[in-house]
Every structure is written in structure tokens, then in C-alpha cells.
Image 1 (tube, rainbow, N blue to C red):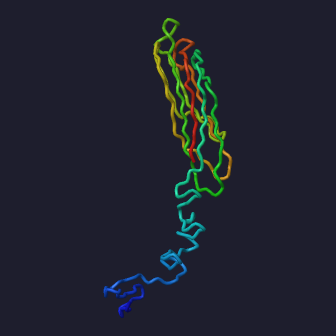
Image 2 (spheres, rainbow, N blue to C red):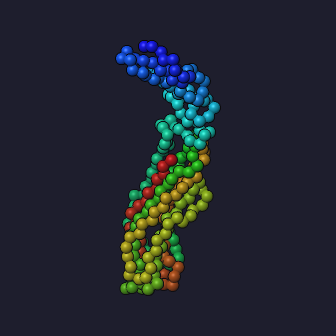
Image 3 (cartoon, helix red, strand yellow):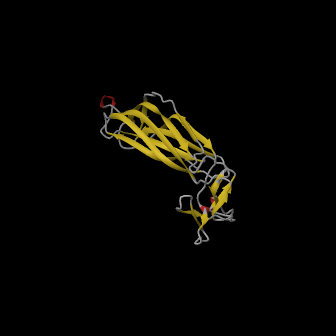
Length: 226
């Protein structure tokens, strides 16, 4: 090939064997920040102090620039855990103004690795059951009521109600479903505990001492992904 006299600092111009003009990018060895030559062709010279940085397996993004790349890739799931309650059929009277726990107290324990960038994990809690208000034939009144509460306790900070269902008036029945998605703060390299439980009881409105019956609780689920 015959070199063209109009080469530039970044482009090589040459005629091929057929007399056609060809252009190639002119690469030079540089320290940081642009294209460079490698033994396999075109490479990227990257800065070591921020942005795109070199690694043993290629280029990666530096954490300090706001985007973290974990060992498994750009989006990293550290773990998933779930615990469940098997459910039961207590068929128990629910007294006015008295809440009782049914099923197990569900609990998950875990921690983030010390080098992971995360503020929250997403937890999901769910509980279902079947209940009726007191039958009129057994002393039920129009103002009978039963209540169910799904409660969570994060790192032993105390139980709080995050979903609630109520059934009001005598001779009513049906199912309840309690469900909540819960953003749970989890600091790096520290142990954390999240608990869930079901409370069911008779309402505090005027009525007979027995407000209703919990026939079944279908069991609960507590899970988190982080």
C-alpha cells in the first residue's frame, strides 16, 4: 500500500491493492481515559481513581461514583429467606376487647456483607383466616365485631400493626387476608431480626361478651429479599 500524504494525527489513510482509499483509526499508547492498543486489538485505557476502573476480569464501575457492581454483576441479590406458620383450626370464641395471638411468631434473621451498599431490604408478611361474628341464637347482637391484626417487630423495637381487618354485625362470616410489604432498614455487617404475628379478638363495641368465633387461621408467611 502507498501511504496518503493527507494523514492526520488520528487517522491513517492508505490505498489498498485495488487502488481504493482506506481509513484506519490511529491508536497510540496512553495512560488513562481513551482508546488504546492491546495485543488483541482496540482496548480502553481506564482511570484508576474513579468512574470506570480496571479489574482482574475487565473494566468495572467504582463504588464512589454512585453505582456499585457486586460479585455477580450490576444488580446483586444478596439473599432470600422465608418462614411460614402451618395454620390451624382453633374454633375459639373471641371475647369483647380481648386480643389473642394465633399461629406461630415468625422470625427472620440476617445481615448484609460489610462491603455491600444497601439501606433497606424488602420484607413481605401475609396471614389469612376464616371467622364469624356471634350467632344471634347464642346471644349475638347487631353490634358484634371481630378484629384481626398483622403485626411486625423490627430489631426488637416493639410490635406495630401494619394491616387490619374487621367484621361487624351479628351473623356475619367470611375470610380475611392481611398483607403488607415492609421496607426494613438493615445496616451493613450487623445482625438484624424481623418478626411477624397474627392477633385476633373481639371488638370493643357494645355487644355480648363473646363477639365472634375464629374458625381457622390458614397460616402466615414472612419473607425478605436483599
